[in-house]
Amino acid sequence: MDVVAGGQGDLMNGDILTNGHGKSTVAARPLEDGFIDIPETASYPTGSLDFLVRLQKQEEKQGTAATVSESPSRVRLNIIIVGAGLGGLAAAIALTRRSHKVTVFEQAPELGEVGAGIQIPSNSTRLLIKWGLEPFLAGRIVKPHNIAFRRWENGKVIGLTKLIPQFERDFEAPYYVVHRAHFHDAMYRLAIELGVDIKINSKVHDFDESSPSITLENGESYSADLVIASDGLKSLARKKVLGGVEQAPRKTGFAAYRATVDVEKMNAYPDTAEILAKPNLNLWVGDMRHVMTYTIAGGKAFNMVLSHPDRSDPSTWHMQGPDKILSGMREHFKGWDPTLSKIIDMIDTTMKWPLLSGSPLKRWVSSSGKLLIMGDAAHAMVPYMSQGAAMAVEDAAALAEAIHLAANESELPRALDIWETVRRQRTGQMQEASLVNGKLWHFADGPLQQARDEGMAPEVEGRDFVSSPNQWSDPTAQRWCYGYDAELEIRKAFSKSV
Ligand SMILES: Cc1cc2nc3c(=O)[nH]c(=O)nc-3n(C[C@H](O)[C@H](O)[C@H](O)COP(=O)(O)OP(=O)(O)OC[C@H]3O[C@@H](n4cnc5c(N)ncnc54)[C@H](O)[C@@H]3O)c2cc1C
Figure 1 (cartoon, helix red, strand yellow):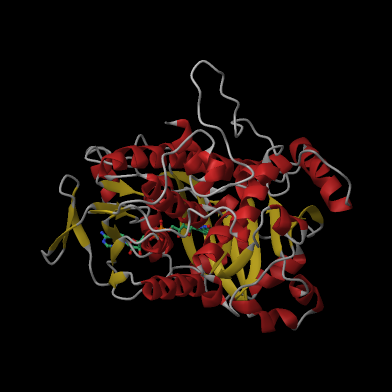
Figure 2: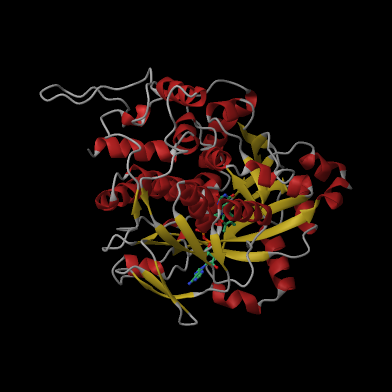
């Protein structure tokens, strides 16, 4: 571990806005004994202080206040990351940008991602763009205009979230959809360009949280200052962190079919071509089921996730064979909107995926303070907010920020403690919001469904609204979800804990 002298000064109250560098018009005062502290930020939901944050960001851009983000950390660590999924790569990028030395160990013989499409919401793109990912995604992303909720039976639009231009302006970042393989490849190439060492074919067999070190299946051992396990839903490290107690994600009683359709097939019919006319996300909702769709691969493929109730044992699914899985999928959505049914009929192959959810874990950092978990290993969630990978990107940014704020080695435990507290709360809320979407979307026709649809009508008709049953449109949920600044929240927590 190297400790670098100089850098940022001591933290004071309000440093979330001044970050300890340079002069800022939004600067805060030092704490004075005997006087009540005037808050610099609010712990309740409000947008009234947003202008201060915006002003600070403008100053940073103009160079009148130095940015914390670009400077190297004072404590420079030798870090091992286990898992080269989107979470592990995000951590590798965020930490290497802050001058840590990062080696990633991945069990797979080839790098890649399972499934086709993924949404990258604004709370994640804001970070990824800052990290320099955009050039690596060139020509591969789609920027949807709207998210349209459709009635299961006839495809009528019953809810509408506009993603451009105001959404993008409000949350200072675009909302993207992309092929998972393209996203992963972009993250991989950026990581390599930054100097991350990625070792494939390297399955970790054991973690020693005290040294800390890892042992591979082939018997080789590697040690570091910090081991980060981003080893997914079936994480091996989670049990180590929880002191030998396993708290695996649980079944939700839902599963998803995942498939893509060639857009050329869809363009052959006016009704299915109409769905492609604008690059929108279209979501059909009905009794216990929904179908999320959008185009990916720069508009060349139509991605579909078909969620449905399924309490059978996933270990038996491979025995069903592809034809039975396809016919099971069609059966679940029989009688749905004829346009959607036509698209479902165009699916040649599909994968069935169990949908699991975790609940907040007691800890993410082991008792030694040298092994931690993040990403799906720490906070698996149903994909109904489209935020699982986005949470891993936030975990990574927040972790790099927390370590960055440690002035020396002895402050590292406090930094990791703050990171764990802030991230447990944020991701626990996102797990909850994701399950809430499963409630809001899956009403059978009746009074609840009618009240929900009436609640969304203003957004479809262009009328003003202060709340919506559509969590993508609801102003309070939107602010919390997309306006969240993972690094800023760490700086706030640091200044509060002084
Ligand atoms: C149907 C569906 C739709 C989704 N849609 C979205 C969306 O639109 N937006 C969004 O943000 N999220 C979405 N998600 C969630 C998102 O896919 C996950 O949250 C994200 O991919 C998790 O990344 P991770 O790196 O934490 O885990 P993983 O992707 O599981 O990566 C873990 C990695 O660790 C490796 N590994 C595991 N064990 C070991 C070991 N012992 N040694 C070495 N390597 C190991 C694995 O091989 C793997 O590469 C969706 C999920 C599903 C199921």
